[in-house]
Structures are given as structure tokens and as C-alpha cells.
Image: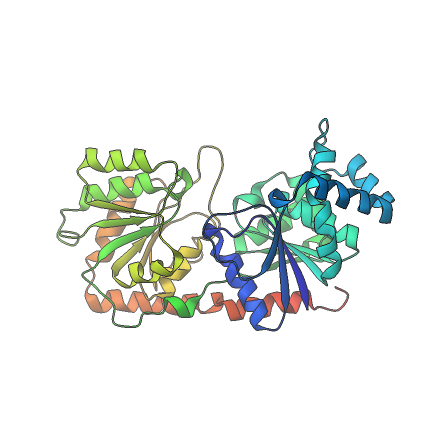
Length: 391
């Protein structure tokens, strides 16, 4: 089967789930191409790709003229009246059409067009699929399920299926649908993780440090985690341990200053290659990630790194927000209240006060939880929907 994946950025280190899903589909014998608006940063690139920002002006104009010649009604309809994309302001529709016209040949090559993220990428995937007379679907992950509900509704109506990466996101998509028939298109399929890559080759390290991995942005809750750690770092269960943070982002300088001011034993590693993440997890006694809803409404869905930590057999501490609260349970870790420093502090102490045997049991529980997220399992589920009769 030939599949076209539509993304805003590719390849992107923070979107390893996309690369793993594509790898899984390739391993099942699918051919996959990717089209994207911009280049991402440092991500794995398993499929041939075309990026709008690489195309010259003359290439874009030639592609749009070609589309006007082959399907004038569809192109003019898009330019005149599409409700979502490009934004209907001044020349932006025309410039938007120029950006994606060259992707239409890839959509015609494909048997199915699929977009990751329910906002701009889904709009573009829908338009490309319509231009090429191909079935269309999309995946929503987290904050994108809280986007303009009318925009979601348009894309759900056009899609043959709409995938929520967690039960909560799937429920959000169902609520946005026009009617029960459209809501029935929504399916829940988790994100893909290279679970085998993260499987612990040795034994669990109960005396290791606390490790946190993620972009240094507000919604990840690192400020809360750092202060919570500082408050209990000299307790019996945390004494001698450090908080190791791997990741980069606009809040790094502020978080480093906070750590110094608090006298916290925090080490910032900066951005790390994905292959290094397993080594960090294998040396940890606990993985901690404490997401919260940012002031601008941005939020996490189901962070891939939580699944990777579970696949490594590491107990996890996270926060009770939708998409995470049905993932973490007493069999694999502990949930704290989002943005609540004392609750996160209590979670750290509670977990690391456990015996090595109990901590190892939590790691085993996480390993079992991670099994449905393997790229093979996710790719098989996606291919089933791509290949369904009538699609």
C-alpha cells in the first residue's frame, strides 16, 4: 500500500512517534512518502520527503498552474471558499495554494493520505486528498484536539477515519463531530514507540538518579518539578540523588537560574540524540515528567517519553491531566496533581522510599503497560484502517 503522510515539520526529534509509525508501516511492506511545510530538527527520517520550504518560487508557480490546468474547479473552489486553509485574508490563500500545489502529485501517487495533528496538517491533508480523489484520515494528539471545533468538524466530516492517540483525545474528537455517524469514524490508536530499543539490557538501578526528558517549555512543568525536587532532595529517600534533565527549549536559562537559586541538585544535559535516551533511562531509579496546562492553553496529550520510560522498566511519576491519568496507575508509578509542588514532592518521596523489590515491580508493571505501543502493534492497527473496505 502507498501512503502519503502530511506534516507541518519533518523530521522532528520531538515527534519520534511519527517516525516509528512510518517505520512500522514500511516493515509491513507499505511504501511511505512524507510532505511537510518546514524542516524539523534532528529527527529520524525513515521515508522519502518533500518540503515546501525547499521548493523554488518557479517550481511552486509551475505546480499551481499545472493544477489549475488539470482540475480548475477544485483549485478555484479551494481558493474561493475552503473554510479552514489557507486563511482567507488578502493574498494568503493564493500563497498557501502555491506552498502545497507541488504535493498533489504525491497525493495522486498514494492510495491514502494521512495527516499527523488535527490543525494545519489535517487541513492540508484533506485538500490534497480531495485534489487527488484519495481517502483521507488524520491523527489528533493533545492540544490540537482543543483547537477550533468547527475546523475539527470539517476535517472529521471529510475523513474516512479520525484517530485519537488516547481515549481522552478520541472523546474530544467525538464531541466535535456533527452527528453520531461522524463520531463513529473516530478510533483510538496509541502512538508508536520503539519499545524494543528501550528494553533494559541489564538490571534495574534502584540507587540511580531521577531523570526527566522533554522540551523546556511551560506545559512540561519543569519549574514545578525542580522546586519539588529541591524541597525533598535531602530527605532520606532522595539524599545523594540528582535530577537529570535532558532537553532544550526557551525556558532553559530561567530553569537553570531557578535551580541555582534553590540550591537544587539539577543537571541540565541539553538536547540529546534519541539513541542516547535509552542509556539515560537505564541508569535511572525513577522517571519524572510533570506536565500542566500552560497559560495559553497548550497541553500535552500522551507524552511518548512516558511510554519509553515504561518500556525501559522504570517507575514513573507524572501528573493527573487528561491523556496521562489513564496511563499511570499504582501498578507502574504515581500521579501527582498538575502544578502542585507539594504533591510532586510527596510523589518523589513516596516512590523512592519503596524497597528495591517494589520499585522493580513497578518497572515491570510499566513494561506491561508499554506493550500495545510497540511500532509493530500500532502499524498493524493503522494499516487495518487504511485498508478497510471502501477506503
